[in-house]
Length: 297
Image 1: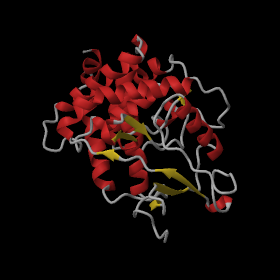
Image 2 (image 1 turned 30 degrees about the horizontal axis):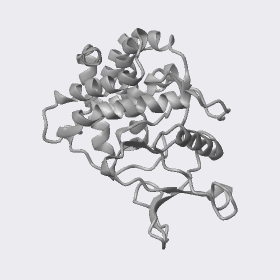
Image 3 (image 1 turned 180 degrees about the horizontal axis):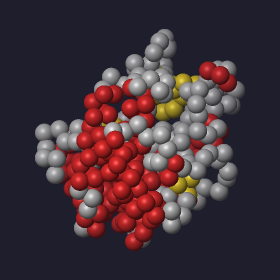
Image 4 (image 1 turned 90 degrees about the horizontal axis):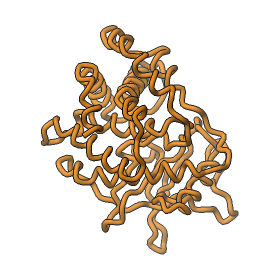
């Protein structure tokens, strides 16, 4: 295909084979968190464990990538999936929570070295944050409260970018699928849960429904997860702070891009996402017990 600029913000192109198969061709960026072969091996492991993930297609030469190392590509199967309206999300979130628990359990069984990284949670919410003076002051007051329980949790391989956009409701009721495994850090398993929920509690998701349903989403996801893998007391105590930490990290990251301090591609709604994240941080700092109450219901 004519690669051009992908979909305008990501270097990702839909491809249909002459035999009718649907795929995505992805250009690997110049910054990678782990070797692509490690990502491939993890995907193979997850498929063996029954987790629904898109397999990388091997080239005719039996390699995972095509093209020169400095500008290489991978080809992966397309997952046919469905969009879930905001009002119906709570009905499906227990299934997402259960699938995430199965994902974590499968990842914990992976025994090969990945060559990945360990998530520096303390550094990410302490050093060089580009937030307003007011938010920085309010964050300073609760930073130790966030970090203290998180520091007690064991580490394992996690997805690392578990956003709602990377969790797919597969068509024809075929369950939940996961995509984008190019992070795979070592972190507490609730770090994935926190990233997912940090997006779910933002306000832009509430399209035509009351903003109060955000806590219904949290409750439903947690119920599905704990049905498969129980969360212990320290994990439950850590979760609200981890959710806040994720939104703080992403707000600072997006502000750095907007300020020109960090050179990354910008999505068309970059400014709106940033403002939504800042609003969510303000809301959570003002309502510190809301997520805890939803998880414990």
